Image (cartoon, rainbow, N blue to C red; front, side, top):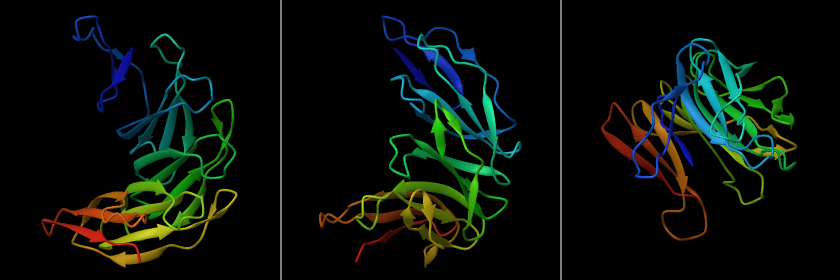
Length: 210
């Protein structure tokens, strides 16, 4: 069994719950965010990394024995800060969604099969999106994109229009410098709500779904 720490080091778990010496794998420059998802449908969890300075996403496919292939890189926006991996076009292939801090966009890289991805499609957000969640917020069985726009002090929602394309964002004001976003039903009405951590105002914002 294997596990991955957020510092991009892989550790194999020994029988007594201690860890073996790390195995490291090259990424792009300044890897900022990570997801671990099976992207090529072989029942092996792969590594996806957003490289902040390289303006790229790395995909490291799992060999199946706790080791990974050399990265394949794909262009993202400027300063990709947060990454999520979710099937957004209902083809049973997980796609990559990236919040790009420097270009004020989100990138959507559709999975073309076997763990390879198409060229990014970008969508405008507020200023400096640094956190992304991909969840169906309008109950149409299509995952939507939710971003925390750090400098705009807003949360942006980009609804999925089908086939992995997205509508123009709708922005909602939150606290000062929203840093992280989560989407969960907090009032048991079977509607997903948005929760945001605001760095500068020392608050969390809760936006209940109407």
